[in-house]
Amino acid sequence: MYLLTIGFQTRPDIEYSISELSFVKYKELCKSLYYEEDVNKITNILDKLLSSVVIGEEKPQNVIEKILLLLEVRALTLGSEIKLKLGEKNITLQKEYLTSLYNKPIKEIIVNVDTLKLVLTVPKTFLINKNSPAEIINTCLQEIVLNEKSINFCSLSKHEQQIVLNLLPGIPITSIITALRDSLNSMTINLNNEIHISPFNDSIINLLKAILIEPYSEVLELEYNLRRGLNMNTYDLQHTPYPECKIMINKLHKEVKEKENIPQPIGGPINHNM
Amino acid sequence: MSSNFNEFINEIKKSSSDIDVFIPSLQQKINVKPITLQQQKSIIESSVDNTLGVLFFNNTFHKIIAENASIDADKLNTIDRVVIAIALRNKITSKILIDNKEYNLPEVIAANEHIKYTIEPAKITTDKFIIHVSPPSLKYDNTVNAALLKKYNEDDFKRSTLKNLIGDLFVYEIVKFVSQIEAVESKASITLRTDNIKECVKLIESIDSNQFTDVVKYINNVRDVEKQYTQVPNTQHYIDIIPDFFVV
Image (tube, rainbow over all chains, first blue to last red; front, side):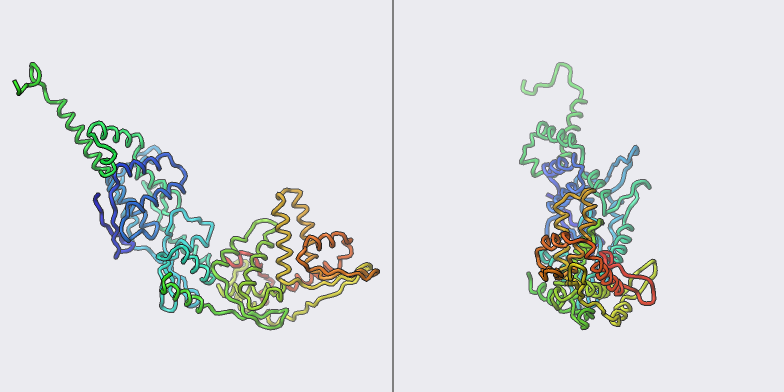
């Protein structure tokens, strides 16, 4: 499978490696997402998708990077042109446009508590519980600096993170949450001047679902055509990227159509063996 | 865990400096560790929007004092809880907003050190009993609160239960302050302040409520003194020691 290597302005010194989705993996993705309405379950599916396609050591550290990576997955699988139905209107967007809205350096919020410096940034997870200030802080905490020694909070295990949180002193939570919310609200985008998409609530989850999948019936029809028309078997479908499958079936349809348009000789086909 | 992580943990532990808090009932200072983010979270989580909310919060706060104070919570009372709360909150941020105006907690702390602590145990004599009263220790206050919370956890919170709750709050409050009851005639006496709160409640409920009139006056006096320690100097503003006090 092709490996796309890409970097973002969120962390300019980091490059991600994204693998293409095979037909089978894409079909599984469509199947799991198509009928799913629960945003928490959709979020889990998207996180699993990222775990499987983002290979190598570098993993997304926050929601913005996850969005950017999912946009790349979308482009790799279905192309850069995105057609969406917003209410009664059909709109067309380019992946590059959506990427440009999010691909920016991320602002940090610095909180000083005695000799301790806490560096907070955008949340690590989709759908944070905005009613839980402690959860907001936990998911936004990036780095802790103490007496010129610093620790990357994101790189700690969950157990280590809990140890640290248990020891940190009480902090002015409300003012931090206000600063974080202001920063997060500034990342809300407008689509077609009608729909507001925030990276931190349901709206981004629903958008990502809409742009990542095709109707499941169409995927099944494609599979039927691949198996019947091109004699592809399960092994082939597991190892051929989804876009290549589409290209091949389109080629077959083109050939069939061209053959149908070739006029037949009078008396039937020429028998070269006579 | 890496040695780098362990080193960092030790640095965090070392960096935290204890707070000196003047304890009114002891007339001396004790050390109290600052509140942690985890403890702050537990206070927020104890915020319950019903009649029992104060009890939930007081029990959570008792746990924090037990973890952070340099002396046993059994040696501290509910008045001391007020000054400790203000000192811990001051460590997070020294400003407080009341009616859209900002005040400084260090001024409250300084003023509190000069309040004359006048609360003493007392003996209240009625026609039938001699009732010994004193402010409950934080530990006993916590025990009684826990018993009341357990009782209402087990019942469904219905309208009829709410009527009972108000009565129970009154009885359990008396249970907190009464340490001993002597019968005037028979000289028989019983010590309360045990872990068997149900028995203490049963005993108090069996006595005519008119016997507790002066007990209630004593309790109100203690609560007034607690309130004194929450007053912002030179104002008529008082600080509410509730979960929101710690969410700043």
